[in-house]
Length: 90
Image (cartoon, rainbow, N blue to C red; front, side, top):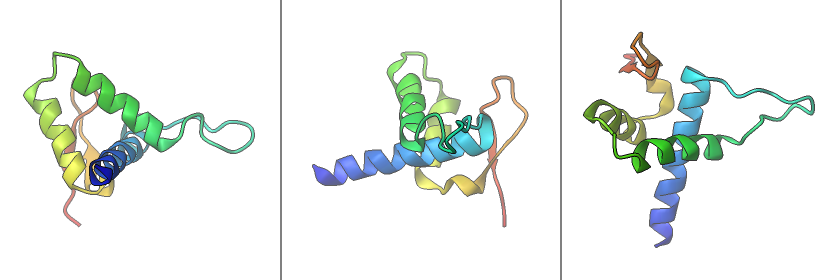
């Protein structure tokens, strides 16, 4: 049970890092901290995408690749909704 919680935490945190870096950076408040932590930012995104019934194949594959790859491997591409990415060869 703890292992499943750890996997979920890591997935949400990686999603938050990716979204902060590639999609929309979080605002830094006056005291120097982000307005949300990266885990919460990623969890909100995952919840929005997975709990709506309109999850398309592209978004599902995007979340799966993000789960399996480090966020640094993904870079944004030009797409209609701004959430596109491609894998970077380093």
